[in-house]
Image (tube, rainbow over all chains, first blue to last red; front, side, top):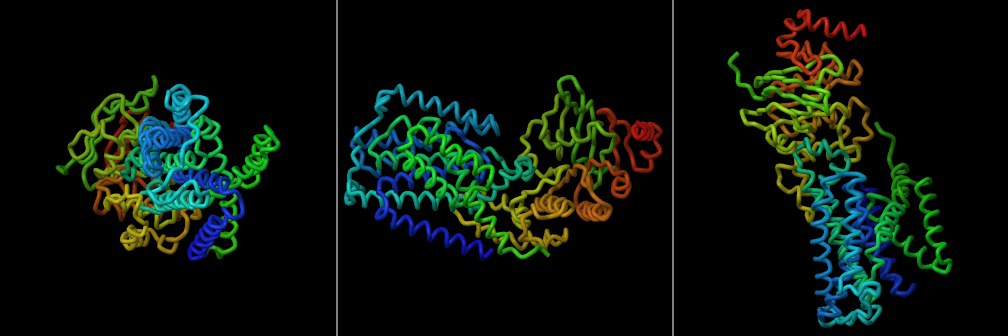
Length: 315
Length: 251
């Protein structure tokens, strides 16, 4: 147990250090993109990794929060903090509605319901007036946070995004190591058994779903402030697929896995952009290799290796 | 025998699209007894079991628990009222530790189970009780192991411990000794006997030896219907029961 605790502090420390030096090493916008997707993937991991629910519609939460934040800030003159709150709240409400409908089914049916409802959100984003259709909402002003922090300064903006990410990461961490998290893991491991212990599993799944959607919304709202843009890409099902990829690559059901996965996928997308459409082929190939060679994901494999080294043989 | 009937079914029927698995079963389980449900393969034992715990909905008939009709209650509600089941396959939470497995059963009454903002430490108050329960099934030494590392017999013991942690009024055991070797069967039989000292047990069982030793009442099912009911001596001398079992063994 202490070895695991140390590893957690080590991993957390390394990531925090990387987060603090990142804007001086790489483009701040790139680093912020990684942080937004890392938060998105952590939110997704709460659902898939710790509750065992595969949502194939998480882009709906990322994207709709992005639209609401962008719209309220640009057209209604909200401050960035308030706009972010509005976007996140929108994702929470959407999560409640979609989750309430989807948790009635499990497995592939659950995934299909989330996908179907997310497609409805995509359609609405394309058709509604305020989203700007194909153009999206462009030129969103970053404004001044809490009346004092000028977010137009890249470094200030970066540290704000880092703070948002750390908050979101902490919420996920807290949730999976809480009394609630224990029940979630029990449901993931054996749902009928959890029922037989007297747990109304639907309620637990719904709360997990809403939490996950809310944090995905927080990531989406932040992302729209970073890029000063809300567009159809973020509500497209392709984004829902990408977050599955990030989570699996990094390590399903591990605390840091989604962060590593998001870093990897965003980096690949960015640096392989010169290859044009080959990017998808290359990330696809990497994905297949990863799933075949190390199914636990990068962080999952590292943890399994550390455990096999440190654990003495069973009595 | 004027003892109170704690669990009762009237005309319980389950029709799986034309195949009647359970056909008008009347069952009355008296408080404080060990009641066994036996019968050849396909007699409908497990279906009755799933109906009682509300994991399946009956086509017809009613179920009463402590005199209250629970025919349309949700399974989690039935469990909270004190009618708790075990499973035929060893149903443990594989990637939780042995201690956590039992603690999950203990934590619900604390009322903190929706609190995602509080640390796990708040559950540590349950550790002593969980360890006590693990002692009773000889698993205390494995407390910090993941359940997946336990051998089969130990997993069954852990499942039993988790079920007992709820302190159910009525314990429903689905083939508690299935797939076990001799020593494990003896161990589980002893555990059931201990658990039955202050509660009611209804068990579905294949192993007649286990049933003979433990049960006060035996109900024999065949093709979804009650064939005979009584003590082991009565039932084991019943020619229809012998025919049902021997006939089945010949086939």
